[in-house]
Image (cartoon, rainbow, N blue to C red; front, top):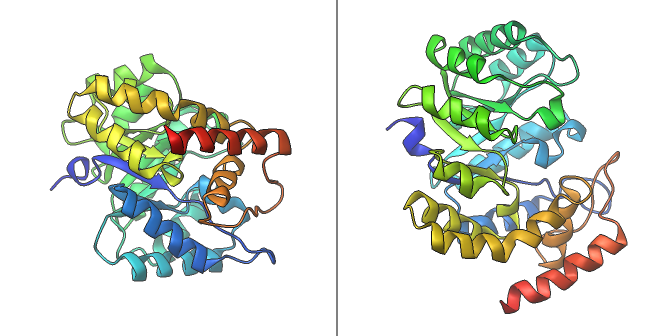
Length: 297
């Protein structure tokens, strides 16, 4: 089975719960995994930026991976985030992290350095050669300050056999269309934008790696399944039900909105690591009000 078939549908970019001492709260993390899997998501994405990985140590990342593999087993695919802006260091991580049970590796493009398109190509080419699992490109210019152009994505997809997918979060619909038009037939293309997932699946994407699925796993994953079945009228109803929730999740930063919702739902505690702070009181109040209407809808 191709990666495009294996990772069709909804993947959830899991948050990392912390306790009042700023330690990883593994009890809450296990509860979150149960919550999203019971909600029907198709796979998990661990150690993404939604997991606050810039503030999680290397040893903590390994602990998170080992906990996830032990808890989930082979019940659903697990995609692991391994990225950075020092190519050599990323290769070291790929060679030393416990990735044997992973389905694929999600690697965000280098941040801050702002490499050229040739620099991006060479970076990912070396990663693909070092990676023990298939590599999924992650284009998120809003965080990295550089864009992987459609032409570079297609070049990587055709010239690097171990690069088998793309999470596209540029928000540039025209760029997405060019990727979908020219991708190899087995190349996975998934949305990195919850708001645009319905529209992008209508254009041919294979699903989404979602932030919102932490909070609304049942409705979100069902919306994506409806989209993939071309039932866009039903999917649109679920999108509009969750739309204000999406807005609140990203009102200040990610994952402060997600953690506020999950805390209100009793899944985790509402702690983040600096420089991120919890959602401000006015927005947290709106979260509470929204959840009242969401539950009753």
